[in-house]
Image 1 (cartoon, helix red, strand yellow):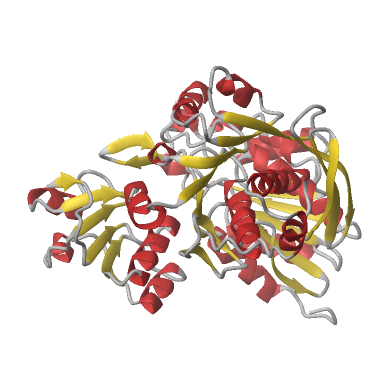
Image 2 (cartoon, one colour):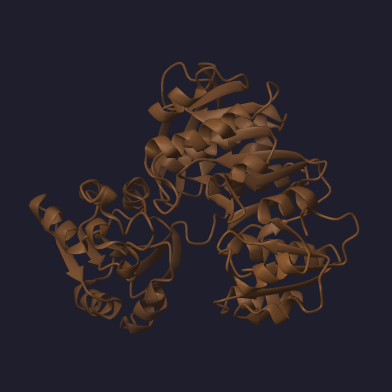
Length: 476
């Protein structure tokens, strides 16, 4: 048994294969010509179908028998616990094993130069923009990202260029390696979007989070170029004493890359970029929100460092089709627009509400929120969430569906959030279940309204159910 990757590999088994990252890795290994199997507790579409179509056989449930064929390598996902029967079989049989980041480094990064996007918010969108701009400019990048990139119809790609774009996650690696995933990578260029408290299941407080990012930054070589957001006090503190080449981006005067004037003319946002306080270029993007403009700004800064032509940057950005579950329009029926977004942290909720509102000036914005993550189901941000919904006209808050996982004294209260929202003068409503939210929306929505649904999970398929239940009209 060894925590390593052998030289000659023909067969690989992935434990917990149906997560976004592990599923992408399984497909990538299949594309490399390896024999790939997997297993997971919850095997269901779309990932199960995606893997099946790729020829990856996935077993329902964890069973030592799944390893009876003795694969050359076992990749153990970070959702796997140490008493998992397949993990135990791996150790007892002396099989070679590794974590997902180790596998990504070995099979995808290799001799390529890694461009990492790290931070509490915006990793997926920023990495997707970068991968697409590099591709559009002819650099043939590889990438692995934690979301479905519409331009590529997938969340991974292996190509022949010298660069690989990776979403660098601060979550822990595996039960046998509790370091953050991003510690495993050696970046040529990195982006740091933000540092806030999140992942309450593994981090105790903001100091604990900052210690992880500090190790990440301290491990960068002096030749590494870091694009760091300029309006985050935690980032300011973390950069002290570091030796990499740092450029700041954001909206502050004096920053190396600065967002200047911008205007919204749906479906476009126009914005000017300053570099070293000189006009760099004007861009046109098919998305809204200052946070997304900052994401684009960091991608532009990286592209410039790589020598990409300004016209190629602008044209690539204009043709960026976004990422699924990031302000994704799921449907329009009878003039009512239903949008799906991954937002769950209060900062992400606030910025998403602010981004969507100007794009739909003619109707009401109805925000629907499901607290579902290990952090949002805790009362850590109980007093922070109310202000996050200020831009919404009507607010629907669901009771957390998995609240029993959280100790009683630490549980988030959706009903308290609704009371606090009403105190702020907001039109807010509490719901025990998803069905009652749909019933309320059917009674309430009118043509021109936008229903913004925010959750990191499937939210009981609320988007499809709502669209099916809405009465048809001439704009359907």
